[in-house]
Length: 308
Image: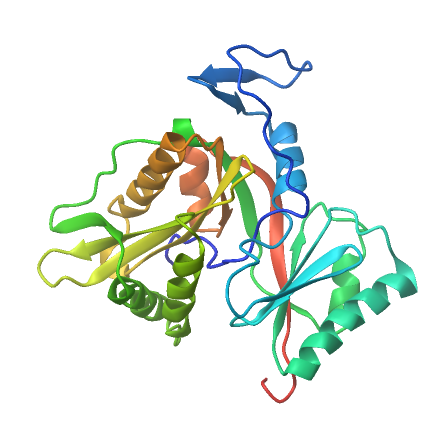
């Protein structure tokens, strides 16, 4: 399998806690080591990273994207109007038993009426502990578990190095994004052509808060690898997504180059952290680069019987 990151396009915060004024020094509680890189505070212990993730990265990103329907139902947010629905919640939903079953059923039934599949994004430290069991009982099926890893952007930044015969560049045209979708389809052995139009729509409405990078074969011009970075204004995070590579080009440093170029851009923008929902293939690479694993995430997916 290729090293890869989640394709996910909808992730941000319930209630954004904006960073305060930047300062040259700051005291922190014991056990929360910090460094200063220019004017960006660099907090690196896992507990603090996880707390920041829970506070800032559990909602719906870019809610103004045309065609999206974003609604809140108690402790969860749901989004419809894309390839499949998406549900995300607070770390502690604050409900259990029959009340939790009813919350889950409402989301499932909402998307059933629309005839759409839906993903409920769970994290390994979510409460109540029985959430995933109740999702299964309601017909939601778990997909592959990923690991949430977070790194300091300035530490992950570097000079991207790609192998001879390849070129790393920013992908800026609609044709580029459709070519990325074609590459993803080849990597995963399924038709992901819809992704090209979703990426085009996302870029059009993101107001500069998403950047795509592609690695192309110099001989053919074919996209052989690609990744993108999604910025979340008002948070400390940028989200790394994509990160897939054609088999013939793997194990040649391309994935590391794509991490470096995106982290470099993030650091230049003053973004504190970069994060990845990492597959089992990409996690070891990212940990070697200095990312920290803070939790796991598993999508639970319900599919309408007719669509199934």
